[in-house]
Image (tube, rainbow, N blue to C red):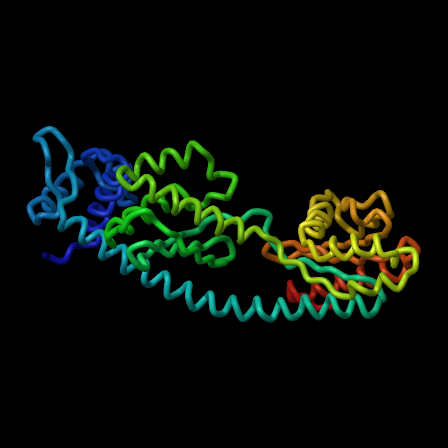
Length: 347
């Protein structure tokens, strides 16, 4: 087959993409709105005539637009794979760099929690920085074997989530590619709350014979986005507050240890802090605590923020008779230090 010019390639890509989306023959007027070439319908008709003569598209009926031939699909798929391979390589290199940064950050978070617990003699917690909502940037589905697909979902900040998906029937590579294209057309830029019943039903309908496969893939994608939205929390000094007699009673201490171990409780505390209009330093005394199992304690929290917009919470948990002045001053100093570290500011 002949080497296509950039203009012909863009027109062919637009025809295939539009046909995949609608299932209807594509006319020159549609393409003039679909591409960024700023060409007249007459020019596009001439290019489409050349593509038809070369065997990349065909006209099913005299009055209809064009549809891609097998050769047109092949050019489209090969070009798409080339672009995706390049993008995946770039993402892989960026992911390795990101994982190194994440490892360093995790170690730092653990160290911060230990230092806080040691300096205050109370229990310390710190949540890793997190965007408010993860949005899908790109996803790629590849065939692993007859029963499994691997979905690679890239969300905000180029965080990559891998999800293995069991499918009810075997798909060939081109069917997998078409499903990838369909899913990207719907999900790029979508957050978890955007993936509603109407969207799911539309995607299943457009996937036709593979609607049951699409349903399983969507379940995996949703799980991956949920995973990206989960907040990681580090704690240290859990046993420090058991040194205080009013907390050390067996029943109270057992409930408290469970609350510290069950990260959902600490997530609730972090949410409460991050959702304040003016976070600053927050002091919760006894019944003021948003966590029911911490009603016998006092909790002091602060918020730190990354230049890119991610936020996290630092907290000190202790008895009601804690040294509030020391704790508040410690958190103020720490938030300044974290601001300098994360945002590379000079003191």
